[in-house]
Amino acid sequence: MTEQDQKELGKILWNIADQLRGAMNADDFRDYMLSFLFLRYLSDNYEQAAKKELGADYPKDATAESNGDTKSPLARWYQQNASDVPEFEKQMRRKTHYVIKPDYLWPSIVHLAKTQSGQLLDTLQKGFKYIEEESFQSNFQGLFSEINLASEKLGRKYEDRNSKLCSVISELARGMSLFSTGADTLGDAYEYLIGQFAAGSGKKAGEFYTPQPVSSILSAIVTLDSQAPEIGPRKKLESVFDFACGSGSLLLNVRHRIKEAGGTIGKIYGQEYNVTTYNLARMNMLLHGVKDTEFEIYHGDTLTNAWDFLRETNPAKKPQFDAVVANPPFSYRWEPTDAISEDMRFKSHGIAPKSAADLAFLLHGLHYLKDDGTMAIILPHGVLFRGGVEERIRRKLLDDGHVDTVIGLPANLFYSTGIPVCILVLKKCRKPDDVLFINAAEHFVKGKRQNQLTNNQIEDIVETYQHRRERGRYSRRVSMKEIADNDYNLNISRYVSTALEEPEVDLAATQADLVRIEGEVAKATAKHNEFLKELGVSLLPSVSPGTS
Image 1 (cartoon, rainbow, N blue to C red):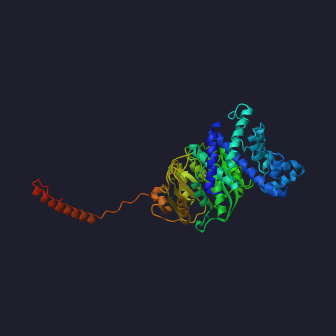
Image 2 (image 1 turned 120 degrees about the vertical axis):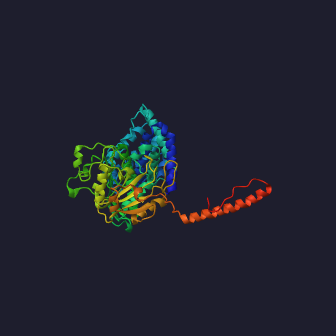
Image 3 (image 1 turned 60 degrees about the vertical axis):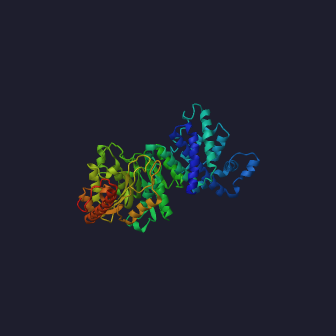
């Protein structure tokens, strides 16, 4: 699907969203719309695989239509071949990694909606429950937990709720039918809609969305070889982790980047605290063709390390990741307990202040990074220069050689805040004895709502990091001694100023110019006075060259 097609489909669905949004509040509508798009994807993918699996035995639509049969081809096959269904579903689980009963497929749901069937609501409830508990090898319990089909927001009576959903689904089906909606198309449309919903959510968007240009920078950095980035992308990433994964777009960007470069990726791990966003992330993975066995997203608090998988006490079994990426909430207030000072994530560095958990998030990610891995995290500029315990943490990170690169980004790139932010690149086994500073704060294109980064500007940042290039007013490699002399302050403008230097003034040349100008003024005055004298008018005061 071309980028233009993606935008066109996204606009069609977004326009439909505008027309229907009055039916429920914005957040509810987002959840319904994305869930139905997800169901459409699962159905299309499953039906295509079934058609391939059954071959000539797959029922023909034309025959059914002539007999007045409105069931989907797959539903008719199930009905006519009941004894073969268990073996068929066994094969489908092997090939598509999931099964959906014909009654719960999108065409069946749309048929119920268009015929205003009173069974739509009940069928949806059963279908969502089946997908959560039985479709996949993995259990996706709660995947549709934010879709409350019994909510009075849809209507007080069953009939009212059923009728409203008939209208919403019929309109969405009409919009999606305008495009050939293959798997890639629907995945792209899902991403587009998440971006559009984020744009309209203001500060709340920070909970689930990293703008694509920023996401591209992080994914490009962590997929390059950590010790020698100049040689290009790694051929294989065993694992990648985002501990504040939102809708999962950043993880998918890493996967896309490594595959685009001809490499392979093992398993994707994510963690998300917000339950709605957690569900969006799981859907997003499946929508982009990531099998349920190829990813694991956990719902829980990162700062308290709620995930049992990460709390392995045996150092030999401690989970570690080739790449860690994150866009955690900025300056998040937290309540560290007394016991957390003994937490292995923070014990040797210190506990971030209650007022800003930024460095707590950073230390969490660094703790689980492999020795030859790369971590890229988005943080507010305050972490670069704030004093107190944050200064002590920063000093320890620098003394241990973990800070590789500091990248300053333009202001107003994010939906959730207008402040400029930075990207910190961290590694455990670094070779250079310096830190690369990139000041890209003034390199952007002004947009209506947010500032934008062009592809060239993104490439500039990535290539500067990759080759550790130095460029006036843009990038510089700064020795650890100079940083220590500056009390471990990492404020970017201290090392790479974008201010233009005032040109040196040549005093002798300037004096000569003034003398020349005064001489010319004196000559002009004398000539003018000759005319005034002939006219009998008062003369101008004469000027003596070089005497003023």
